[in-house]
Amino acid sequence: MRPLRFVALGDSLTEGVGDPVGDTWRGWASLLADGLAPAEAAAEFTNLAVSGAQTRDVLERQTPQGLALRPDVVSVVIGVNDTLRCTFDIHAVAARLDKVYAAFRAEGAVLLTACLPDPGSMLRLPGALARPLARRQRAVNAVVHALSERYGAVHLHAAEGGWITDRAMWSADRLHPGERGHRQLALHFHALLAEAGVATGTMPSPEPDFAAPTRTANLWWLATAGTAWVARRCTDLLPQLLTLAAAEVRHKARGTSARLDLSASHAVASALAALSVTEQQPDAA
Image 1 (cartoon, rainbow, N blue to C red):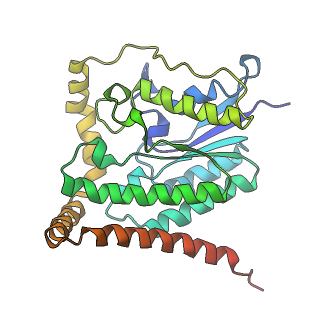
Image 2: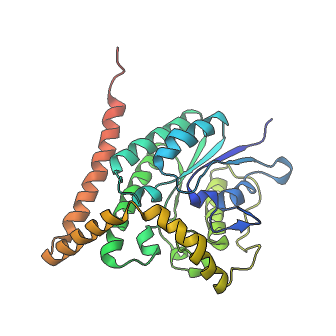
Image 3: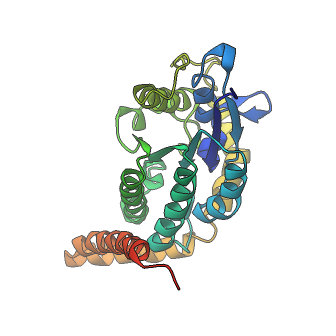
């Protein structure tokens, strides 16, 4: 009998950014993998997540690689980078996630998903800048919620809870968990999988292996790699974000801010309805 196979898809969160071990990243998925099966029959773990990945990358690159590995458990945690791009389209995000989820469930894999906090609040951006990003992340989370239910995924509500406001859980950039945060994600996923009878190994420890980085180390990271990381991901978003912020200010002045939320809700409903229509269409003769 072959070992249980766990494949992780996604972006920098799943890659493990914020939880360094030596010259590489570890992260929640690796911590979870250690507890999926007993030590004498350790799970086989492959991490295909890549920093900066969007839903398109997961669909077109990571999913074919993941399917070829024939996983028993697969995690698909993605979407934040889509919200940080000027090309953001909730219809496209929904269609891609639907295809990814369907592909792995068709092969019998246990699917892990999660909704995530919005980057604007994590970065403590001013309200007019933060609200458009929050609205986008809420849209992605709504799609992930709906599709997770449709495909029977093991879903983690990571967009809420005390861990979001606990500074000790987060790395210097405020976008990625630190070791404690990654351990919390691993713990919560393990609990859900254990309840489902999938995880049979030892629950990951909540206590970190390493001391938290000093303030000086955090500042050095932000001044070097951290600044470059943020710059690479926001270059194409900034002009549009300023436009979105201007719209926020105008609507607030007119007392019509609710229209923006309503429009976003309609877009999510339309995206999910489009998937339902596609599923119901008969095959071509």
